[in-house]
Image 1 (cartoon, helix red, strand yellow):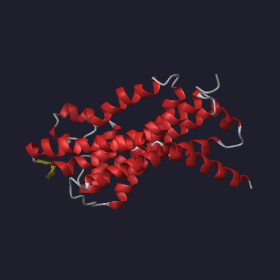
Image 2 (spheres, one colour; image 1 turned 60 degrees about the vertical axis):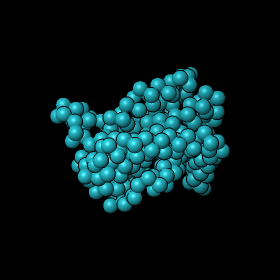
Image 3 (tube, helix red, strand yellow; image 1 turned 30 degrees about the vertical axis):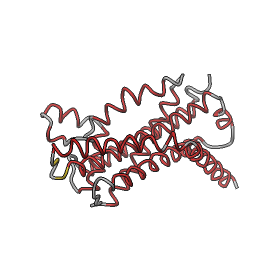
Image 4 (cartoon, helix red, strand yellow; image 1 turned 90 degrees about the vertical axis):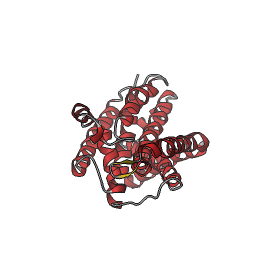
Length: 257
């Protein structure tokens, strides 16, 4: 019976999270799609014609996987950080913490909600990309696996940001000054082989670089990184971030003030 309660609690959180961003879809789903469509037009069509090929593929085909991954990362992160911080700000999250719902159920509900938004935007962007490029998925299992794991990583990261945030300004600092630079320096628009040796080494320290290239490998069958190593990195990040989130919830860090 208690197990049923946990399932109901999990489903309730997930449904609430999905309804939250679906209700305001003009703010949560449409703007990211328009932004990525502009990337397709400007970088893919206009700039891409001058660049020609990148990594043995037409430039548009090369950047499409990176742009899809970028949209998933940004929206998975932003959904969780904004949702959990809003509940913390309104003190409604305290009702969850005092309820007989395990912390892992609470965390899982928010994470799945973040994944739902990230994957929804990713699906829209993928559909739009078909208007600009002829997509062929070389390794479907790799493609699906890496996009799901990446969405989990950044949903967890958004949760950590929300826990420590003390104002609405705090939930925009990390995406602006950390997440965005890492994305743009993660090989979305270029192959790391074009960089000098020093910057290739620097890129190897960027976790998003591995995620973008593994996702590109799923589409095009080519990558600048070892795909197995990339999955190991994803797994390590998930374990570390998940354990940290559970610890923060258990101790009420940033919540019980």
